[in-house]
Length: 114
Image 1 (cartoon, rainbow, N blue to C red):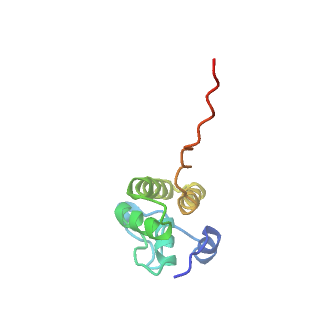
Image 2 (image 1 turned 90 degrees about the vertical axis):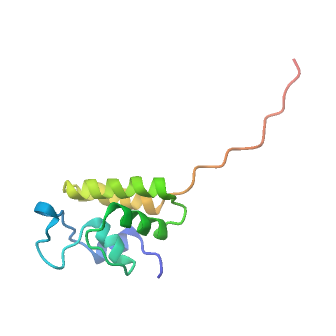
Image 3 (image 1 turned 120 degrees about the vertical axis):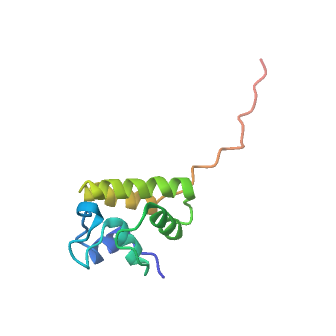
């Protein structure tokens, strides 16, 4: 499946919801931001678990490894559940644009004689 941008996903899934009491859905079409990410990839899980969302993020952004993807998933879910959808979308964007830390240079400055 072609990679979708956060803008594409937001346009396709413009009305995320926070889960209601005990995680019950208010309508069978409700989804959270993590769910929008899952649905954009043709996967189920309109309100995915953290572990499931972690795997989806890793599939969407191969540079992510489990620890980083899990931190992004936890943040997306926490912000979404608190109703801070903009922050959750930003964390999703951060996850999809994640890159490994820059490689450390093996080039050393020449040593000057004293």
